[in-house]
Length: 157
Image (tube, rainbow, N blue to C red; front, side, top):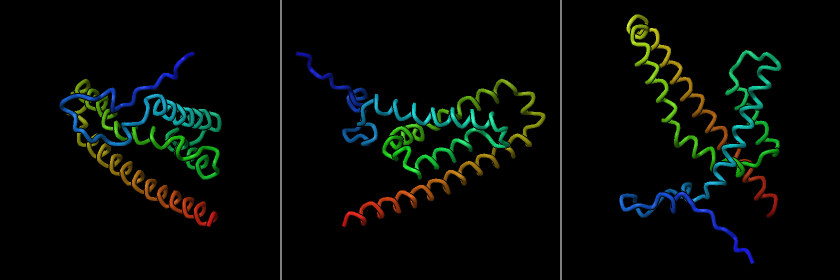
């Protein structure tokens, strides 16, 4: 008789003397679940990239993907609990995406010194716009999530 194999959790994988005893509950989820959710998010993003190219849309595939994911979540095609842990994991590791930017600055020092002020303005403005749009999207997403929660829980009572 085969015994079911228990997958290790992040907490078990990362257990070490230096780590605190209380670890974020997000890290206690099985690795496979997080990878599957990240894969689903990647499939939506890849689909958005195909749609952008197919319809020659004048916006980035990330923005198209944002609207596509929002539509899929609002229509119930994708349930929020299918992607919430993977999304939290990706957001937690967002700082890693800035490493290529720093490497580019060190590779193109002459360009940076010649046009640095223009690049800095572009970086600051685009970062502020990304932060602002992320905050607004997060707030709207929470409102939708609360409204759906109230609707489903008040419908049962």
